[in-house]
Length: 270
Image (cartoon, rainbow, N blue to C red):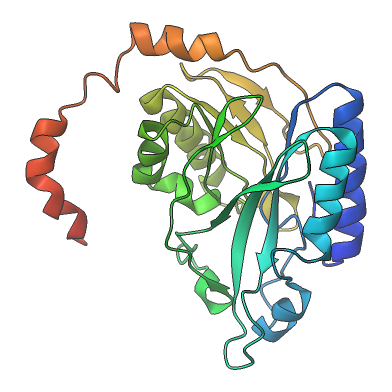
């Protein structure tokens, strides 16, 4: 998806894709990060705050109604405001899971803000501090993370050991030197080391690299959309997860009895 600065246009396009996915008998549709709107670097926090909505605002309400109408699960993203405090114009980068009855099942606020490689998301965004429990859907148990979170393996592992068998990572991965390579490597690594599917819808155009991907538990690429806007449909074979975990038992072979002796290492910045 190539989001514009106009959230109404982005919403209209999103609703069309939901309808199209349902017509093709999909049970789940996943949108990228910044689905609500593209925020150019020069955009002031105050302007983004005006675009943002509360979690029960018009944008999510429209998506929920469409999910219910089309009987499909939806992973969507918004800029979220918790309150209208004029002293703090920053917003959350939030992903939600809406079930086929139009009910919101999970709300995840991006933990790791992209303050790296010349970018500083923390100028406009607030960081969340909760890893949401995986959500059971008709497709599988979905664990949510967002874009830059993918570079931190801890969150993927926490979601997996808590029952996720599909990691969904709505993303707006910035293009640049080695960035597409990093994108592919990270997605494959998180899939392989956890024995899970990784679904990673990505923004394209503007400053983003595209290449929305789905990776299966052994690391094979099932979908790579390149720089094409639109959607692809595939079947998730949950038995594949069991097969891979049985033959490559990385989760079972973990030495948590040893790891716990080094838990303080997580406090180090070195």
